[in-house]
View 1 (cartoon, rainbow, N blue to C red):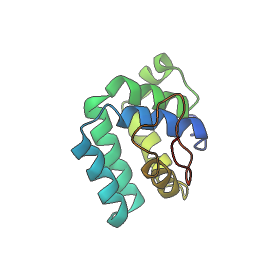
View 2 (view 1 turned 180 degrees about the vertical axis):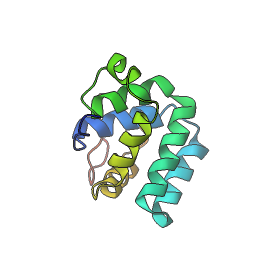
View 3 (view 1 turned 120 degrees about the vertical axis):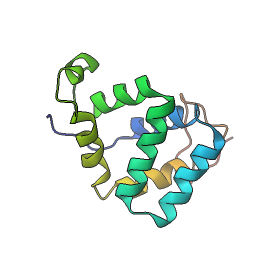
View 4 (view 1 turned 90 degrees about the vertical axis):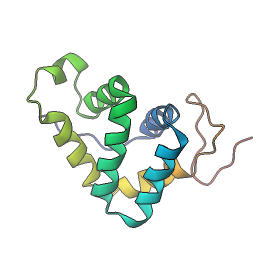
Length: 121
């Protein structure tokens, strides 16, 4: 498996766009669990919810994180997407990434997400 790259600002936009396609109750559950669960538990919960509703988008994002095309990811062992998730959520910046998502106002658009600490205009 390729090395999983560090999270970037563009990942906030990607994940916010995916979260926008989910039911509000699912999104609330993700952020509620982030307050009490370990980063690994929160990451697994996030990816389970996303995979159920936005399968193609999450798959494309996982491929991007690993520096692969979707077609290349398709040819790797079945455990590879899970390995990418495990690698991602085991890092120290995962919790701050989730916190950044939690500060995005509801009217943020995928083309212009709010930055942590800023309000939408």
